[in-house]
Length: 208
Image (tube, rainbow, N blue to C red):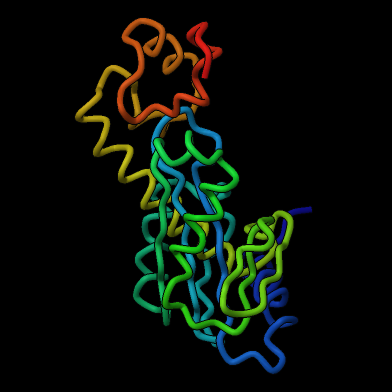
């Protein structure tokens, strides 16, 4: 049985409410781009006002692209803090995707000044504040969901821009993920500077 949009919003808000006791500033954190063959991993840290109730905030994967763009604008307008961090393909190759993701998250949280950080799955970031890792947090927490939208919108916009530089790979359509179209182009044209060498070695019959 499906629930209404308002009921869904209440679910997400209730999760955060359970953490707000004695906490004056709560942040949500999420990342996008751990799985693609190309492009950066993008992290976002968002501090929403305690009374924020943006109706369509939800896990970014559950929203259409048009909806995400609209909700992104609402989040940025209303948020007390929005921080974005990133790790580039070269950094991902050098230190591995998990460590690069953690680094991007630390960069996103810089200046947030939160007492508590609700983080989608990732632990032990070493932030100046308490951290609580929540599995599937983007589908459970209002603040993490807001961060997931910010990260997703900004990364998709970047991949669209980069598509103009490297049109053969279809980045505007696949956002760097390993679709059949992308893999065919990779094998035909070889990698570009945006590709993660540690991810594509086996696809090309090379050592990573």
